[in-house]
Amino acid sequence: MKIRSGVSPIVATVILILIATAAGVLLWVWVSGYVSRNPTAQSALDERIKVEAVRVEVETNSSKVTVYVRNVGSVTVNISSGYVLDVNGNLIMGGPVNSTLVKPGEVGSVVISSEQELIKGNLYIVKIVTQRGTESLYSFVVPP
Image 1 (cartoon, helix red, strand yellow):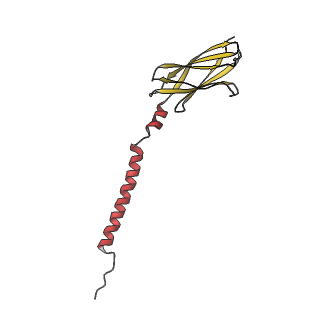
Image 2 (cartoon, rainbow, N blue to C red; image 1 turned 180 degrees about the horizontal axis):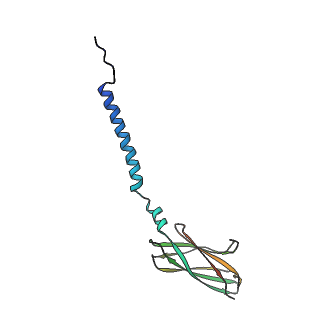
């Protein structure tokens, strides 16, 4: 009697099906990572702003800083916060501002006001932040 050695055809077929299924799953995971991009993350990359100018109004016991922001990116930005810092990075005034939408290529304005008086002749830094976290800094001197 002859003894046959080797793998039976049924076991070989099951192994080939498992290998093909695993390869298909790996291919699907790899392709889906490239095809489906997170639109929010992509928008954050396309978002760019630039502070064009600053207008400062200082009165007794109050200050108002109007910041003009240009959208140089390719998506509409939502300006959510504005801060005025001293040269050491300490917060002087600011925080959340009225939401300002700025379309690509346009200029929007943000008003930061406080009951604190900015010192004339001092150097300050204004920081504008969008809802997605994009920032722009601009330094200015309060006119005498």
